[in-house]
Image 1 (spheres, rainbow, N blue to C red):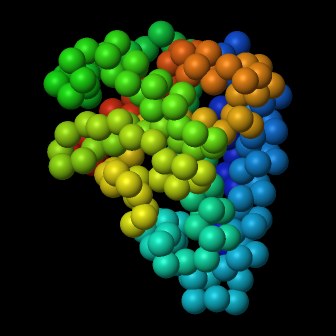
Image 2: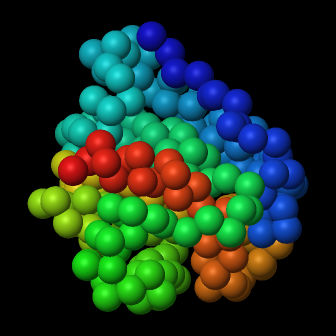
Length: 201
């Protein structure tokens, strides 16, 4: 079975002015497509060919770097697109908001910790909000790794992931990753994050 690239769940310009349409077009149509294409090439004719993306991610430590990196890239980006939505001014509510306050002290403290995880990730990688042992935790991973992988430093169930590879922000924010991480809060799909939180508990 081969993997395919699903269309974005919104228009390329839906996240303007915080993430520009050109970045979204290149990021989805070129970068994400390359991960899918390279993943399909890497698993063709191997025992991994019939596995789901979740199964591949779970055994990242025992598969080839090509499958780990491109499989992670495909899973992470699919997760990322669904983590975003047109700016609505929405904030976490209900059980998710209470869990954020319990884990971090306040929503602002959480945002600071998450932004720090993303800004201080050396080179390319991801910042994550995960559920670990029933509680929320912030972590980051290098390259296209994620907290579901057997090789992850901090393992857990991701409910929010933000791409901090330069291709995610460079056209608009140049080398100013913290500015991108400050802007991303305007386009987080908190309804989706809350849905993931409910499922992860």
